[in-house]
Image 1 (spheres, helix red, strand yellow):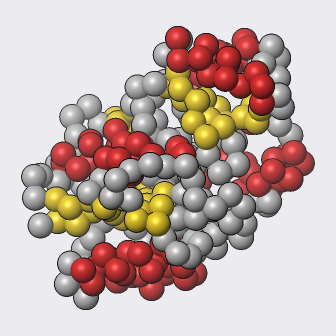
Image 2 (image 1 turned 120 degrees about the horizontal axis):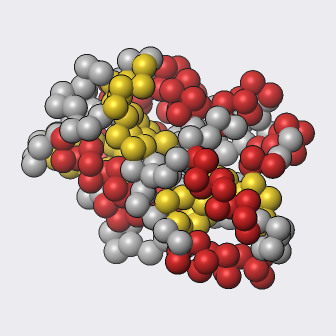
Length: 266
């Protein structure tokens, strides 16, 4: 049996405030020794995620912008059909709409519903919202598929969500932003695609901390919810859901180790 670990990043694998992952480093190294793929499944951009993948020493597929595209190392086998070479040693399977199309739809209705998209925010505003330094913000702004936004009139948000759904989009709620995405994409879809490439004898673990992780957690065999330092546990309702006791990254490391011990892999 092959173990696969699908994980959100912000607030799940890395600290919500500091973005550090030191307390998970030893477990990530152990998983590499055990040949257990760690598949990042995040709302981050390709540029942000590739930087993190390299820092962590991962060599697994990863998915960006809430399941909009899955990037596979060119040495991965079998590569999925239709994987488009994008350079930097990767090819991509695109599930979502391109950013230009998403952004055009968003701008058409943003003023009516009092929404402010990331594409309209200056560096100072983004720094206040995220706490990230300028170089990291530049990577965040390299959107390819989705538009993160804030709702300045929450009473109008529901109407915008219904409008989006009638036009082939979804609105997801993350740790800091709402995200306008294509209804064809999703973190759960990422699990289905990647799992299918590893064959039938696979056990999947999923770790997340937000409502936008729910479809991923529903798609895995062992779903684990990490608490948010501001909001506590996200309102995710899944019968076999495990609620971690600690925040990221310690909560991530503790729960993954429990799985490894249960399976007698350590």
